[in-house]
Amino acid sequence: MAVKGLARVTANLARYEARVLDAGEIGMAAMMERLADWMRAEHSWQNRRPHTESTIEGFVESVTPTHITGRVQADIDAAMWLELARGGKWSWMWPVIVEHQDEMLAMLSAAMVYHLTLVRNPAVMEEYEAAKVSVRTDREERVRVGRMGRGRI
Image 1 (tube, rainbow, N blue to C red):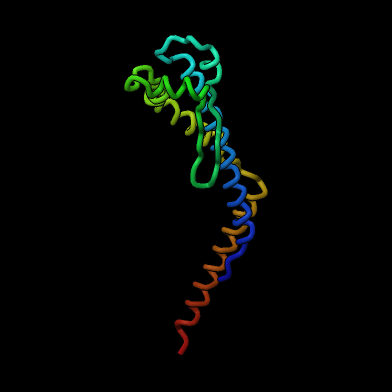
Image 2 (cartoon, rainbow, N blue to C red):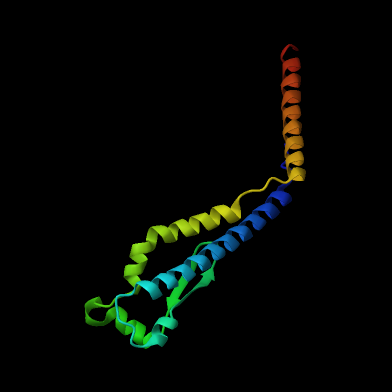
């Protein structure tokens, strides 16, 4: 029995992969924006340089079929000093990530579920049902022919 519809299956898989990448990017963008908000609001240091806090931003850096990378950045000199100085006394990035990791994963999961929910296309469903009938008919025909051949010598 020959495989039919391989081109359609391949095209559908390509469209699905594109939807996965889009969903991942949408989810990561929302999560990175929220992460930057948390970092602006929950740092332990007194804000003596307002531009440091206002430069905190999160964004999607790259999206590939194997991973999605997000980045949080701020005024590099002040941000790095606050994160690493005095043994991390004023560390503000990592503690926020640890505190909100469950919420971050939930945001990504929700975006993937929301944007990847399969919508049943009536034309595709009709084609699928017709293919099931065709396979069933082929199988029944093989069984019938096989039974007829058994009794003959």
